[in-house]
Length: 75
Image (tube, rainbow, N blue to C red):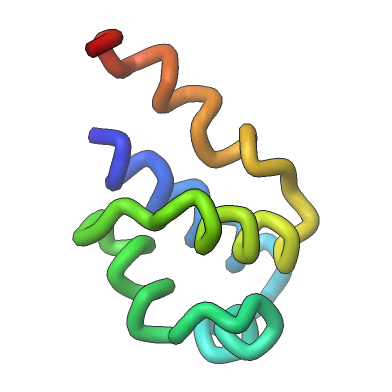
């Protein structure tokens, strides 16, 4: 669930800014392959990668995880 939520938010943020995956990859220094995998919910990004993407999109790190925290059980 968390992977899909982060992926949806990443893709939505990218598209709102009219950026391609390649443009975001160049700006954030995160590979386009990794961005694609995150957007499709295939992988959970590390905090470092999420920080790079958030910074490149002009959003806070918490933007990606705020709803995920509400839906996830505490372990």
